[in-house]
Length: 439
Image 1 (tube, helix red, strand yellow):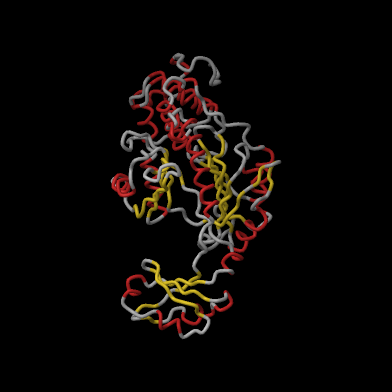
Image 2 (cartoon, one colour):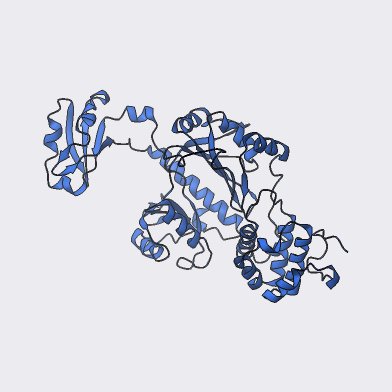
């Protein structure tokens, strides 16, 4: 009996005497003989069992072009599946990646394979898993460590317990990231986001701690931490992301047109955010942000919009999570001298000015669009916020908070230009033409 090695011609036939008993099941299901033979080879090596595959994976293999399916299975055979818990979903992810690469570069796709890099140090990773008792689950899109910790009782950590870690060198894995964040407190889980097109990480991860204090400590200790020479991490408190980044949109489209177009494809779209080109204020920058009513709605929209099944006015779009919005830190907020409180339409009907002008340290009261703002002479005089918090105003309970300081315009422009550069890199990486205006 020949031993399967995954080498040689991936389409080479195998004599019937070398088949497993599951080979005929694959043929009966409608798979091509070459595809069934390659899959049977994987069965024989013990990397996959027939019962591991669900109907979704088998149907996808049946509908896939034969040579493409054989190439995908060869890549699957050569993959490190030690920490892959759902092999059927992983195989579907490999097929999706192959299809995207084929779409973006039809000439070279057959010769392109995902380069997984060196991967984590398996000895270090094994030691971490044995010491912590956590699990590691690998998919084509992320590497997830933990969640929940062993012997955890109670609900998952609430808001403010998660941090976003950006600027991670693309060749790093969780075996180098976990020890850093463990110093700040108990980790609930860590999700290192992966790019299936390159096999490397996407440059960012989400780390959830069991307490908010640990998350704040991670920001204090590790923001601007030099993890490699000349490469510093960016760590901020993360909140459930409701916002998507969509690149390669026509620059001549306005906000209402984009809203009408994207609202057709997924529910829950609240707002479309665009920025004018610095060279032509009548045009957008070639990308926009879609704000959804919830993280769940945004996640559904991301899956649908990135499926590759439709174009926006003839353009193949790129969809990704937007970078988390930067929140002012406690030091910045302590310098704030104005309050805002949410009463919306009621502010137009009732005199909110009289409520605050009784405080001697209030400079003035103004209303910006639909929200009233109260300006104080000194940040220490904002005790009015505590005094009136939750009080009745015309039948509504006031909710008062410090207004966030305006963002630095230069910093905002830098963020937008970095987004343009990343969009150009993503277009080039996927073999898509870069618009001349972005060069």
